[in-house]
Image 1 (cartoon, helix red, strand yellow):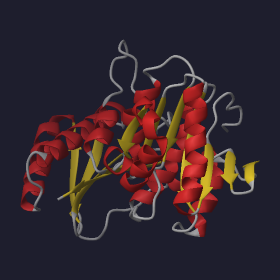
Image 2 (cartoon, helix red, strand yellow):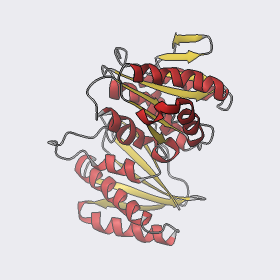
Image 3 (cartoon, rainbow, N blue to C red):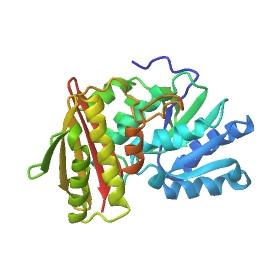
Length: 306
């Protein structure tokens, strides 16, 4: 259980409308800038423009990132946005990250919640603050309830308060339970001797289902990384499933491995560490990655938009 976070802070800002949004975000950023703390903002495009305009002549002091692009896959936000920026600095850092907005799909949402929970593991003990805005006017009550479970501190119009429901480990457990591939999905088993052929099979299947280059090459590379991980760390064999949805192709790799490190694929390993970069690469390639595990079974599902 993540309970000793300090000096790390991870509040959720509950806002309604542009005025409440800026009243929460801008003082948070300016306080950090006045203290000499590096700051970055990763929020959806409309809110990014609001913040840039409100910061006026100090906007150049803040790194501005469009979360709709950088965070299209929630699994890439930690390594490619938050950790990437925080890793550039040794001292205190301020970040605003808004991974959940009304336009997120039903498939993306569980990955967003897991991301918010894992932030607490990734930065516990670090002198760093990440403010996460939640639009109470556009998001349904269950989303706001999940925010109380993933954030130790809540900021509302009445002021800050400690979340009575903070339980990031419980959230991860609730949102990482295996799903089954749909009826009609193509199935292909593999072992060490079939890694090359299963990658080729997946690439041909993707081409027939409308995934064009260069994204088809990315899809094949992601398949190669996942199947190799299964052979090396998941019992030596695995099963690949493939199916097409309305606007995406989806692949799922299942093996008998058990994940023991919740931040696998989220935090880059040190330069001297051998391996450990396969899932990190998959998170950076795919439009969505969802991972599920129970003892003796791990499933990784990847989505690529056609």
